[in-house]
Amino acid sequence: MRDLARTAHRSAVARRPRVSRIPRSNPTRGLVCALLLVSAPCFATGQSSLLVVSGIGGEPVYSERFAAWSRTMVQAAVSNLDMARNRVVYLAEEISEDVDAQSTKREIENAIRHLADTAEPGDTIFLLLIGHGTARGDRVLFNLPGPDVSAAELDALLEPHHDLRWVIVNTAPSSGPFAALLSGPNRVVITATSSAAERFHTLFPDHFVAAYAGEGADTDKNGRVSVLEAFEYARREVQRSYTSDGRLQSEHALLDDSTDLARASYLESDRAIYASSLPAEELERLLAERDALEMRIESLKDQKELLSPVVYDDRLESLLVKFALVHRALRKPKTK
Image (cartoon, rainbow, N blue to C red; front, side):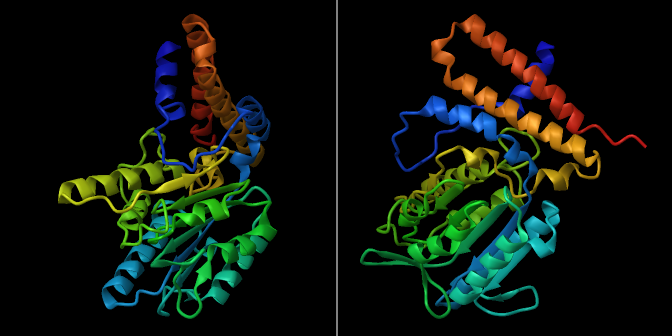
């Protein structure tokens, strides 16, 4: 059983990396953990949708670069992650065969409304912004063909759909303030920069897309890339690029996530992975049990300093064994 626990340890409780988060006080951490345990089943049942917005390039080199990254992300979602194409909306500066509409403010509003109206409570919608960003006084903007969209306007578009989970990734320069302005329950917000002052072209989108399109981002080796893993991979590769080139790093990515949704959020849904191998009711039960165990493991890790080593190890081993057994049942082929 100890060998089984060691195997589960890699996918369930790989050491959580340190991330650049917006500082926040958290005096009720124990209560938050308890609430997460209660709400864990919602992590298992949701479907995912993706909205990719490629902004205005201004120059051919940037227009081509933004379009290439955006297409790579769409292709990765559909081909690598088995996301249905009707759950993906691709907006771009120029209309072409694979583009659903131009990336204007109105079309962004239409796409958000469409994806939200076709989603169910507990579903996750990923919003990926690839392009230029600017700051004008206290307004931070993502640059589009026609009027730009501000963080406040984007927040207003998302607010009516608070029963859904949102993962908002703004890969543009000067995107830092979007993290604080879009922060809220049921949201993960990632920005390529830590402030509006970091206004130079960013490398972050290239590496963030590569986290899903390539290999190397799955650090816990569970066969999937979480939002947290994609963020960490991109942040790490950005730093590596600047160091390799001998340049001073001019972008520092942020992740705002008050309830660890990033660790439990994936672009591909559990249903897409397991639906063909298990009956629906059994799938729902196992996924809920798996996510509850993951939360219990994380809660136990937070209590490590309060427990004796023997008690901690025994409790952790027990949870890991249970997690491994559930994981094995999820991957068990359907009996003919």
